[in-house]
Image (cartoon, rainbow, N blue to C red; front, side, top):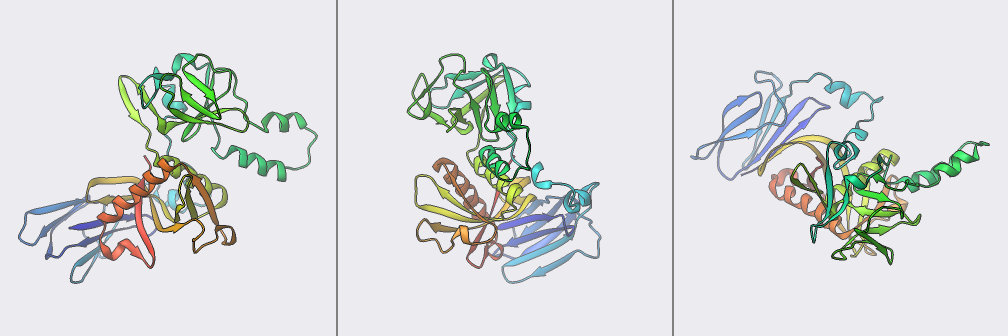
Length: 352
């Protein structure tokens, strides 16, 4: 059996779509779950992504040979209407994945270790200051500001913020990378040939930027704090970049390119901040609903620069592959009646 349970906050509805070759019976409906009987088997419970009203007259059932679709009236929570409908609130800014940020690193002693040899490359004791970057597209934002800034005689401020200049021992934290200067203390990192590497095993951890700052990828590190080891999902790099583009330009269609391959994906970011339930896991409270299709550089049926609100985004191969894999995994779990829309495939990516 395949199913998808999706909370649609703007219309106050939970939609449950079920695919099964056997007869499906509803045994019971609770505010947070629906209990089914598949054929002659044991009862099967689907956790709903949002509470529903059991006795609402708006609840309905559509049935065909292999599919059943339940439309259930959602219980409107306090603040739901403001969160999703109030145009004065920038909801997208609240859903950018934030992992290993300043608040996390200030919470106690930590070490950032090379994933390959597990040696420490950055530690709390080496950080004189920890600061957050306003956006990972800082350079692009500054180029735009310089082109469109109003006339001003305050040239000192322009020069001061034209580029990032971390202090010696200052760790700048972005959504998917860390940034340090060439005055970083210690000898655990090596900086040569345009790359940042682990001094112990020479594994590449990042790149040197045009401003001679050292950019270290979070997905190439382990974070160890309170005796626990954490990993950074590479697909979060793509999600962060997508959210930045969505916030800055309102772009909903993005041509996602892989640095080391001619393959690319045309993405249609359909919704952000959704709550869904999928067969292989419990309710996912924060995810992005994405329609996607395969493209190839040089053979793409779309020219991103010529289509309104379509952007191009090139990402490292590990981030591209991880993001695509997450889309494919969820795509295979959902009913055939909802998994395709014309030439577009549907997938969901969790960002917390």
